[in-house]
Each structure stands twice: as structure tokens, then as C-alpha cells.
Length: 258
Length: 374
Image (cartoon, rainbow over all chains, first blue to last red; front, top):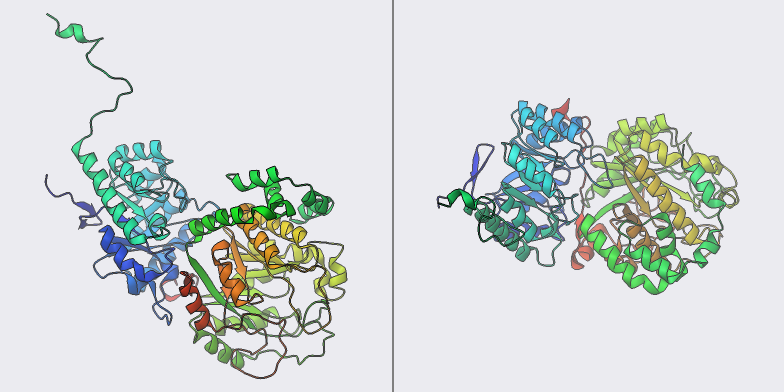
């Protein structure tokens, strides 16, 4: 089998697991998480970045080889997301941006309309835009038109660890959308990441499930392996599932009978 | 529509009887509900829930970890002014208390801001008494010109304002608002606040909502537990927070859990709120509103603050002085209330790390008027 490359924003990656930097009891565990998971892309909330910090800056713990994916956590409108993205670039965080526009502090569900607006503006400004959205075909199509580099649909509400509640919608996105589909949010167990990859998702982003595990480093390793296993299963073309055992062709067998 | 009709409706209910009539089965149902209802919240605040505190703690702890991780956001209060026209009978700044009154001038403010910023703190809470002629909205805006240089996030805990005044402060860089209703008991309220602008129960009750409308990002409410039966005020605080969360989904709603402490004056609280009561309140609130921020101040002792870390708290003050100018000038002054946890920011940081929690110093980046976005 030739090497499986994940291409996004003009760059090539061998890992299909994206990780995050939130909710850790101690940010100093982040380098070990990156290493054990094999992840090469990491998201960080710009609101937490403090380049002049006297008390430790999350950026100090992100290994140099990682592709940085700043996110717009805290943005409530397209305009705020655009402002945060520009700030991120001005602060030296690069051209990649994960758009999160959330104006619901209770369920943290993303606002698809505002996200699409921000995507369009930022893509025109040369950003590599990865928008976080609901698993909705129309939103996904509008993101393709807006110039997104990938679509990041949620598996279930962010931070809930509830798995792939949007399974059927994800399946449609995977089938219909030409951009990479990165399942983001809600993945609580490695088996769920594996399932998303088996379904044909291009990658998964996992933060809470790793950051809040008792042993984040071991959990990161488990997710790294699960994503790889799921990807390989997808590439190998699993046999079709049947509810009943099927031994012959009772309805069409006559066609081959002499 | 405001919160007032809802609070009024609750005030007509026999709440103490309702708390007493909760059964074990009600508590079980409340704890195991996927989404807790106001009735479930009441059940978890009732005496019947006391034998189930450990079970509630397990759930509250899991919800806190899931929603906030093992992190505590740190902030400190900065008292700008202690002039006050109110006569709140439990407060050290009561206008009739014979204490030295002072207000920071911009040059003194710079010194205070530098002293606080040197500890690494990035989230600041500014406070004044209720004297709008002295600590006027214009004065506060001029303070923001200094403070914005040092702090990416500044919240206010001041007198109740009109919506347009809050909007002006938002424009000047204020992003959070704290307002304690003190008690939701409308009959008791005027006896505790006999004179001054704060006497207006309803104007204060609707202040958090006006600030939501004005564009505040974080709105923090609370009752001063002990002024009335704590269960009643805890219930109404949660219902108020839920009301704001539903109506203003883009606002981060938080709740403080202050209980009465001693201060200059002679007021004795109506009820003593025990550690167990505090814990029950926090657990019930976390299960009822899993995403709500919970703030615990240095009114609480170091031991208690460390013990409650896994139970729901998300924000804590550190390096606190409740005196005007207390961060940069040392000397004998009178604070608004006595604090129990006198640890410095560095000591607090070390304590959190020791317990496996990340002290979060910065969790906001102002996006309004910076260079790249002009």
C-alpha cells in the first residue's frame, strides 16, 4: 500500500489526528501528548495566547514541528471571528485559522451562517480556513463556495464526549463534499474516532477526551492508533454488513441456471 | 418581560414548605435527570438532598471536568473608590460608617494597575461604592484608558446603571459585569438597604439583564448568602442565571457564591451558612446549569477553597485587597469586608498546581479597537 497522505491547505501530513490545547490540568503535558498521538496539527484558542506572559504561555508548550491552527473561540459573530483571525496572524500564529462562531454559551453549537460569512472574508484574505460547523449539507456546500480548506462538522456538541450522534449526516457530508471532512467535537472514545475514519472521514480533531483523561498521554496514543486503524479499515474496503446470513441468490439465481 | 415577574411568582410560593416536602425519590430523580429542571434544582437544594451530597459531588465533578477541564481562572478585585451613599446595614462601606473615604486618581490608578499586572494577572474586577457623582460613568471610562493597557479583560462591580451607560462602558473596553442582588426577598430587601439608590429592588434586579442587552460578554450574579434563608436565595439565583442564559445565549453567565463575613459595623446575619450548605449549593447549581461559571472569592478560607476545587468552581480571586489603593500602598485601611484567604497570586498559583489544576491567567483577547482591525 502506498503511503497515505493527508493533504490540506497545500501541506502534507502523515497523521490524521488533530489535537487541542484546552482543558489540560497542566500545559506542560502537551509535548508528550503530541508525541504519543503522532498528531501534527494542533489548535489553540487565540484568547489564551499571551506572548508577554509572566506565568507561562500555552505557546511555549507547542512543539515547533506542529502545524499551528489558531481558533476563534469566543467569537459570537462573523465580524468577531474575522477580527480574531487577523489578530492571530498579526501575532505571528500563521495563516491557518479554525473558525468557531458560537453565540450559544449553553450548548456551544456553532452558527453556520456567520461561519460561512467569516470563511468567505478570510479565504479571500489568504487564510487557510477550517470552519467548525453543524453536520449540515447546505452549510457545508456554502463553505465549499466560500473557499474553505476543509469542513469540520461536529460529532455531538463540543466537550460532551457523546460520540457520533450526527452519524447519518456525517455520512452524507463525506459522500457529497469534495473538501476534507474533519470530524470535530464530541468524540469521547477512541472507538468513536475509529468509526468516523472507517466511515471515510478524512481526519478527526480530539481535545476534551484526551485533555480530561486521567492519563492524557496514554489516551492520546490510543486515539492516534484508533484514527490510523479506522483509516486503514476504510482504505481496505470493508465487506458489506448483512443482517441475515446469505448463502446464495434466491431471487436472481435463475439467471445463471442452465 | 424581565426577571421580575418570575421572581415575584416565586416569592408567592411557600418555598420553605416546598423544601421540606422534598422526598428521597425526588432527589434521586433530580440527580439522575439528563437535564435538571427548576423542580430538580429545588430538590437538590432541599434538606432531603443532604444524605446524597457525595452522589451529587460525583456528578458535579464530572460535569465540571467535561465543561471546563481542570482549570481555574484567576482574577483580582481593584477597589477604585469607597465613597457610598447607601446604608446597607451589613456593608463596611455603609455611608454612616466613619471610615476614611478615598478615590484613586488616574496617576494612583496606574500604580495600582502596575502592581497587579506584575503578579501576572490579566483578568481584573474593578469596584466602587454607590456614589455616581464621585465615581461617575465618565470617571470609570477614564479609568479604562489606564487599565486597558494592562488587562485584556476588565469587569465592573459597581452601582446599577442604565443600559446606555453599560453600553458606553462596553465601548471603553469593559467586558464583564458583576451584580449581587444580595437577597431576592423583596420584603426583606428594604430593611437591609434602608437608604440610597440601592434601595430600588427592581432596578437592581434588572441590572444584569440591561448589561446583557448592552453587550457585556460575561455577566456574574449572586446573592449574599446568610441575609435570608440561604436555600431560598440560592434557588432564586439559579433560576435568575437560567433565565439570563436562555434569553441571552451569547452571554457567559456566571454565579458567585458569597456568604456573610464580618466587616466594619454590627450587623449579624439572619442565618449561618455552613461549609456543608455552601457545598450543597455549589453541587446543585453545577448539576442544574452545567455550563455556568462559578466564582468563589477570598471570603473563603484557603482550606475550603482547595477542598471545593473538583466540585464546580471555575473562577477564583487571588492576591486580594478590599481596600482602595490596597495593591500598591500598604497601611492601616478599612476594607469592604474581611478576607480569609490572604495568599498572594504566586501562592495561589502554586496551590492550584499542587492540586492538579491549571491556573488560567488569560482567557480573553480584546478584539475591538486594535491596530490590525482598524
